Length: 334
Ligand SMILES: [Zn+2]
Image (tube, rainbow, N blue to C red; front, side):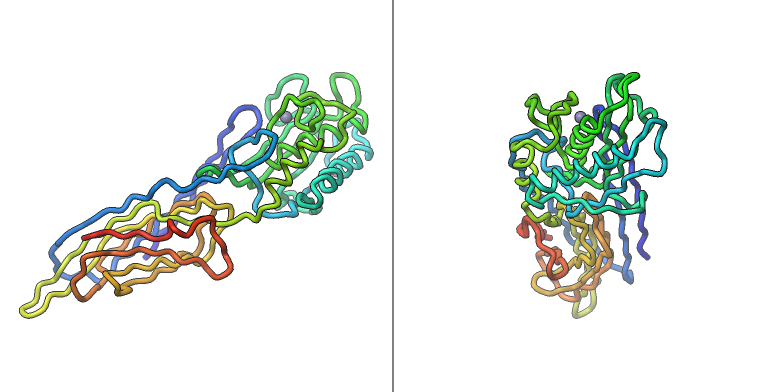
């Protein structure tokens, strides 16, 4: 029997972020047990994976942060609007999205969805922010992401906008600038002290499109395909034998932990276990999401003959590319 558990915790970093914690899954499987004696065991510990730093001129909310797909879907809430809301604000949001698409030459695009629950980014106008904010803020973005090794995958962004700054109603231009700023956060950008940037932390109705530096930074990130990266984090193996009169039969116990540090959720991951050059077991793990770690435990795999090394290998479905394939194997002497 295999058991699965899934836990997702969230906590807020700084004023803007929610991080999604690592999920953990445990697979456990016990094979037919015979009266055996333990002979030897070994352990494998992975090297730290190679990290990929994102290029660009602007600061990021987190190293290597991005979405893993384009277009990003957007839900624009025009149903539940506060007093003082005008259709001009929705037009301003549309213009903000169009300007980001135009300046990134279509590397960042948005598609509209009518479903707030599945939308990647939701934009809504509120009377007051749902979280405590600085008094003079007019927009706010909560960006939910999975931290990886030197990378981070954005899973969701929630943008809230006020329609008033103090007692004064915002203009359409101010709204366009503010939506651009929150979209910038939603795509992974942090603040800058460049006043021409949409990421300057003070609203400026003269900045109605991403600056050249803003757009170049976004293009640098989103011109690259988001890849997967599975790795064997740790493994250990134990050899056992059932002694016979003439022949002995050999068995294998152990566990292997596989982690997905890439941007892509990977289905049907095949774990191959070899005793010397003989494949003694293959296991298909239904899915390893970005940021997930899965421990696969096994007992009493029948290796038949004696062996001195245990090999682990992970295979991805055809067509799923990885940043590194050199971290997909481990070998243990037993
Ligand atoms: Zn900001």
